[in-house]
Image 1 (cartoon, rainbow, N blue to C red):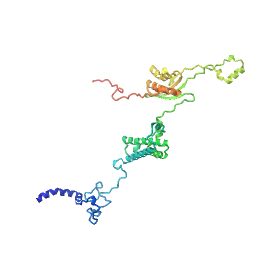
Image 2 (cartoon, rainbow, N blue to C red):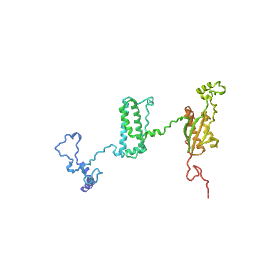
Image 3 (tube, one colour):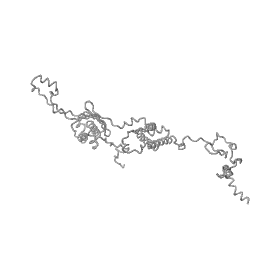
Image 4 (tube, rainbow, N blue to C red):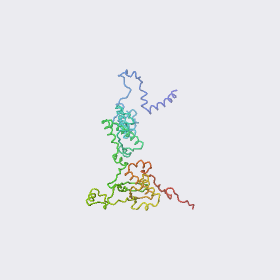
Length: 379
């Protein structure tokens, strides 16, 4: 009987020997929470003291990553200082801390605008807000600042919050909340690209104008061809001006008076010059032998109803006849818009101001052209 009892208690003893802290916990008396205040202070506490455990606060144990030491089962847990950041265990503490700060700034700005009854803002009021286009740092630049690899998802999350904060800044600055606007712009300036001015002016069209001689200069493109186009209106004489016939002048004094007051009336009638189109100092008919190319060039003049009203001189480079004629037509359409801004709607509807984006498909290895294959030979 004793042997059977011993065999039954042996696994429990081995378990308690392997886990001495559990064995110690089983020897601790249970005291209900309601009676803990009535516990006799003279009673010896069942918990061991620091002296009993021989605890060293600054222990240089080899097993620093373990919560308990294997050699000393009753050792007190190692007291590591708490991490400085709540995002310490995420592995990207710098990014998530910065993201949390931006989220906090967005939340505080939103609550402040709601208290001022500036949110939600009606659509008609939002439409008249002063524009402030923002150009944020690239993902690479932002990752360098935060010292982490900035993935596309993290970059989108950050820029989404910054765009929302920029919208709140527009509302605060328009409403005259200088303090709120100043704090918001200070945070936005941290994430804005240093090349913001250059980026905003990159896609803006240059202002086209005519020089002192009435010439316009434009630039057209098509495929790999480029065309620099100069256009000047054809000089038309004043038909209402009457030319004085010297034989009908009664006296020299009268002729001298007319010559002094209206000298242009003594010139011979001007012959109306014909308009010409020169491409690389070669007439249009000689440079482009294909009629379709010539029709493509004069199409903007025909649409505007100004065929023969301008002299055109162009320098074309690159590509073939199709690309050069398309580039020249693009430049002529832009030049007509300089002289006649009212043609903008007409040219937009006919797509004359739009550069043709079609390009020649590149040649593929193993093929004769982009898609043309060589003749298959069996042997």
